[in-house]
Length: 85
Image (cartoon, rainbow, N blue to C red; front, side, top):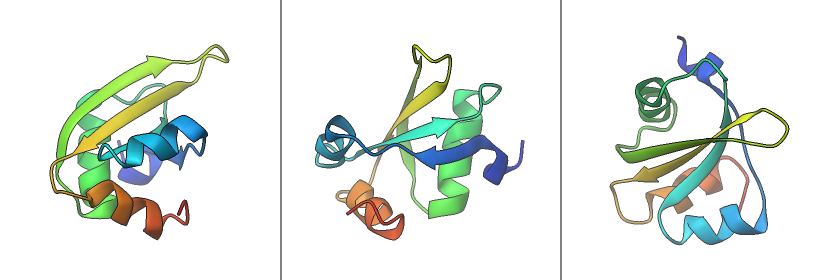
């Protein structure tokens, strides 16, 4: 899958803002995307190395990914680029 097809948009909520402090970003992703696809898309689009990807299906049948980054404060950098901060 293309990196731009994997990530739909970042999710902005109180919980996602709190998770930025824990170096994790929350993204809405394609339902067909696998964890490896999500990790490579984040690396390609944002230039950050991924430590861990956790996915969850929401009540509205959407797929949400919690992406933990390796570098310290990398999630804050990505959030600032995306206009979340």
